[in-house]
Image 1 (cartoon, rainbow, N blue to C red):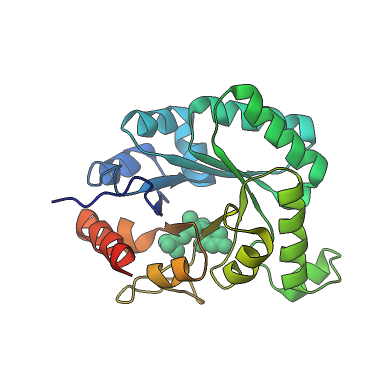
Image 2 (image 1 turned 135 degrees about the vertical axis):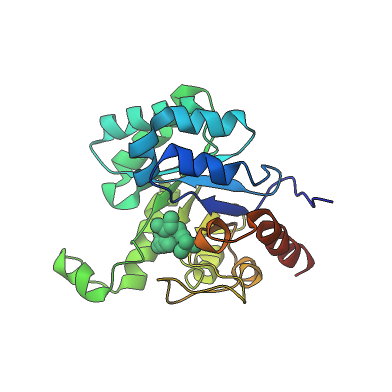
Length: 236
Ligand code: C5P
């Protein structure tokens, strides 16, 4: 029997280069057990039609396009994304409060109610890279200050590493949405991720939703793997 949750915590990163491969994978899984993340590669290749198709199959879609532009442009992009019916979308917090407030207004104009979150500091960035672009404070201060700006601008949460989650959860409260990649079940390959936590550890650290890609997309039996992770979460 498939074990379902009303609010699936797993967001599968659909990191495929074309719609055919993405759909072939999606046929094997169940929308009651997960959501799907569509990022820049797949969206650029397959477009909004694929997103609408996934939604029509019953999947909640996180449209991970990390908008960062002048406020009017971001507002219109967020409005258009919301009209597609996505479950979640995001912008870069470093676009500033005017841009994030415009994003919020764009979402509201659509009449839909997706979760709108921001990226603070990309986890591919280190302290030296931040200094290079003129940030003089520490990386963790920058994450906290951009997350503060995100909340003040009326957004629902941030993408963060599970390591950052406890501090952000404490600072911004239970309702703030924390979406964390870098998740690996105990028996899974690390791929190119270095600092990873297990699904249940991530939830214990304060994550709201877990972005998991290759451990599921590269699995010989994606549905079994997905069920196993859901079971681990439910009994933890
Ligand atoms: O396959 P894997 O589980 O590593 O996929 C993680 C997904 O989360 C990928 O789509 C990756 O781009 C994304 N991501 C990440 N680390 C971040 C932000 C996003 O791994 N800091």
